[in-house]
Image (cartoon, rainbow, N blue to C red; front, side):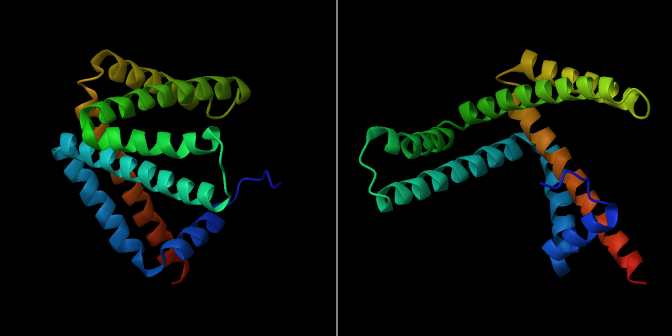
Length: 185
C-alpha cells in the first residue's frame, strides 16, 4: 500500500484525464447549480434527497440481482436490498423526512470532522496547528447549527451546504484547468 501523498502535478494530471475536454463545462455547471442552490436551497435540498434516494434504489435493485444470481435463499441475504429499496422509497415518498435524515448525517459528519481536526492539531504541533483548530471550531459551529434547527432547518441548510460545496468544486476544477493550461504553454 502506498501511503505517500501525491504531488500537485500528479493530482492535476489525474483530474485532467478524468474530465478531459469536459472540464470547463463541468466546472461551470457545478458553479451554476451551486449558485441556484444558494438562491433556492429548499429545491436543492429536495434534489439532493432525490439523488440519494435514486442511488439507494439502484443499489437495492443491483443487490437483488446479485442475490438472485448467487442463488441466495436466506432472509439475511435479502434483507440488505430490501432495506435499501425501502429507505430510497421513503426518501421519495416523504422528502422532508429524507432531508431531515440528511441533516442528521451532516451533524455526524461535522462532529467527526471536528474530532479529526482537533486530534490532527495535536499531531501537527508546528505548521498548520491553528488551522486545524479553526476548522474544528467551524465544524462544531456548523454541527450545532444543524442540531438546533433540526429537522425544519435541514430543508434550507442541506441545500445551502450542498450549493456551497458545488461552487467550491467548480472553482477547484477551473483552477485545475488553468494549472493544466499553464503547464502546456
